[in-house]
Length: 324
Image 1 (tube, rainbow, N blue to C red):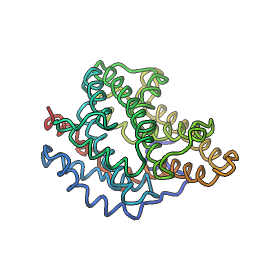
Image 2: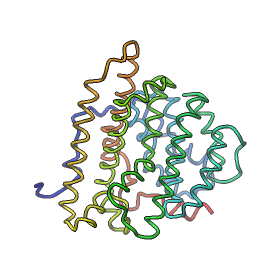
Image 3: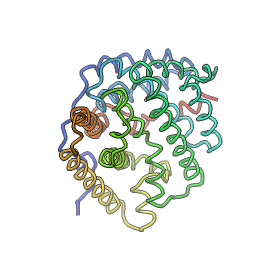
């Protein structure tokens, strides 16, 4: 048993964390980008997003991306943070209304909508088209964005009613709501714009993507549990294990750390023993490296750059007040 659980000490990876050499420049430009694309935001909200260090988030998670990639990724991340912060305690109907407006704009089926959180979408669409193209936008990004909204809608039910989901149900919801599928799509765009479906649909590649998602969920839960416990949240694997099993915070944290570590071990095993994809071996290796890089990159961003998961660093209150 660990004497005292501390994610700063216990969460570690035998994987190199590589920072994109363009991250500092992109991060320095983020306040101006936010003010330009979200002119309705009060300065307090801009400052909180500045302290989130979205440019470093993109640069840590995607160390191989070029500046054009990072600009597009930061546009996606900023919008996703804004949606999370504004609507995490709304209701399913509101979430699905956002989905039904946002996706047609991103697909180019309708023009932009004069609304604070929709007016940025034509810009996002153009930046994503540059890095990946229309087919990727339709078959990858928007498909998984729809899944993200379904997960976000499910989260509102549990949060608003203060109901703990079972661990299995929680993982189902979080696998959709944490946006890791979209991050996998962005890793694909960096790798080769659009990979053949027989590669992305291969069982080993799907398991690697699944493991990356699970590891990031557990990592986030271990770092955010103190804040979520304080605000009475029910959507954290540690809190759910405590609730259903009647164990201590220490015991629940160790359980989650153990699952996390086993997933990391399996991920490394698969990554080091990929099947033979013949002529596609180099591009598959590159894609897997871009996927796996998200794990140490997320930890690097969490430990050294962002204030989002610290007291006063979250922009939810500011977004509630700014968007009506």
